[in-house]
Structure formats: structure tokens, C-alpha cells
Image (cartoon, rainbow, N blue to C red):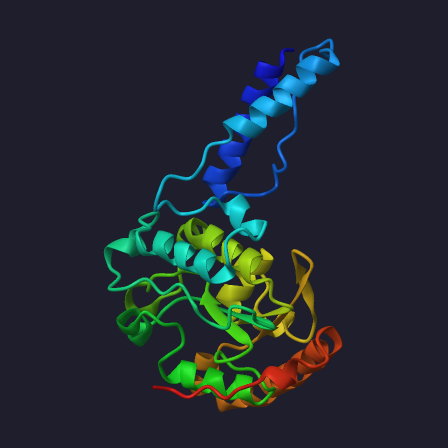
Length: 275
């Protein structure tokens, strides 16, 4: 097989992966150097390497940076998140794009100890383009503050889907799947020490399970080597006061894990003040 044929296969696989994920994955980088069979002489190898270095395309002026550039640190996390938000803002992968007022990518610290993952925006979130700003969001802020976490200082908050499902229904599987690459990119860029899933929709989609909160809570799981805990959604606590005690037990257990992973995380805590 010639090096050109090998390169074509490699390019097809990389393009397919990027298309499925929705962003430039670094899984295929650094790109290998392909040779003809039998292997070329040393001068041909050197010429091939020089050609690859000099022929690498530069991003067009004003274009969003490639994901591999973001991953290697040539673009700041803040700029990377802004570029991702721009992609989310024009997304039309699923039917939720037709009924939204605003996309709701996420908010919080860009160097988070914790990433909180919910299910999707509600009425107020859709109006303000911010996650967890309604009554459930106010309760979430109190829950986080109880273990010295805050979207002002050490926590980032996002959802499984970035557009509001009509009448606040659960997102359909195809909607969650269409949006999954955005959350994957956020996790890759923000690099949280731990993830807290609030509600069954978040847990089922992130952990790829059919189990509900009552079965998942009390244990830690792994998502790309990041510890994941599951607790009840704040809206469930507003509906049923009986769930508040087990939710508090979940938070205390989560705090102990955070102290194990990042012993001084509480030093960075700053209370979140609503505008």
C-alpha cells in the first residue's frame, strides 16, 4: 500500500470521528507519517516530514481555532469556551433549535474544581441564556454553598442539552445525542476535578446507564477518569421535602471526595451573588 492510500484512510477516519463528535478530536494527533511499502529511503522520509510541516494549513483570519490547537494550549481556555459558545449559538442539529429563544451553553469558573451537569434549560434559563437561574437554580446555589462551591469561583454549570425542551419536558434521546459533543468539549477544555450530575437525565446520558438517581446515588463513577457523583435535581427537592436529607448526605460524601482530590479547594470559594 502506498503512503497516499494510507493517508487517505487516515483522513477518512479522522473526518468521520470529527463529524460524529462535533469538534476536532485530538485522538488522531499527532498525525503519523505514512510510507510506501517497502519503506522509502531516509532522504524520502526527510522530504515527507518537511512537506508535512510546511504544508500544514493556517486558520483563516477570524476563523474559530481548531480543537487540536485548543487542546495543546495555543488558545486560552476562555477563548476556547467562547468559540464553543459561538458554535452552540448557531447549532441546528435537532428540533429544539426551532423553539428556543436563546441557547444556554453554561456559566461559571473556567478553572473549576467541579462541573455540575443538569438536564436542560427551563423557562427562565431560555429567557436569560444562563443555566439554573429559576427557583431550582436558587436552591442549587444554596446546595453548592453548603460545601463551599460556587459558580463565582470554583464551579462550572452546564446541561445535557443547550436549548429548552418545550414545556420543560425531558430531552429526547436523539436531542441529547445531538448535543453530546458540546458537553464533551466543555469537559475536555475545563478539566474539572469532579463532576456532579443532578437528576436522572444528566446521570443517564453522561454515564450511559438506565439506572435512576435512587440506584446511582451513594457511589462514585468514572467519566474519562473523572470521578462522577449523582444526586437529586433541585427541582425534585422543591417538589418533595423528603429528598432533602438524602441529597444532603450525597453532598457531604461529595465534599469528602473533593477534599481527597483537591485538599485546598475551599480556599478558592467566593459566594455567588445573584444580580
